[in-house]
Image 1 (tube, rainbow, N blue to C red):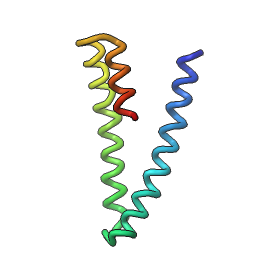
Image 2: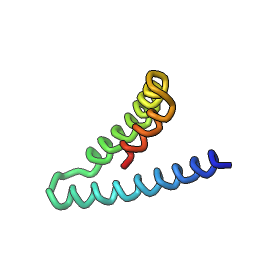
Image 3: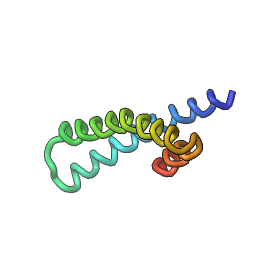
Image 4: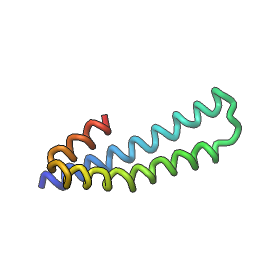
Length: 80
């Protein structure tokens, strides 16, 4: 049951992060007169996608090289 709770919390956190970061990016575009929103949103989506690809790979590598707790700790610290 703990796994399902953690996955549920992760889903909620990802939803909150995505919606709040998009609003902050829109404010920054307006504040600094950067022009188009589309380029900023595209770069944000690329960064999110790279994080979803690279994060598990790095976490798995850390878990295999050191221990499971080191991988989990490193990802947890990175999230803070």
